[in-house]
Length: 79
Image (cartoon, rainbow, N blue to C red):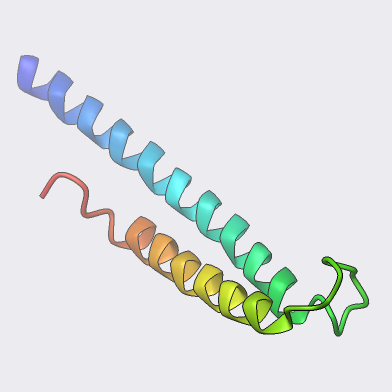
């Protein structure tokens, strides 16, 4: 009976971590798109003096979002 409880608890934890990874991945993906394409969408980000930094940061956000979404898909937390 205790093993069944532990399995159920572990399954719930995996589900919650997976949902958190998907949600954070989507947020970082949107942030990356915002920084990469903000000038084309006429969204003022700042004083526009350093657009190279915005592109690098946007690319890093997209890469991190891909990692978070992949980690949520694999669900490899306790192995």
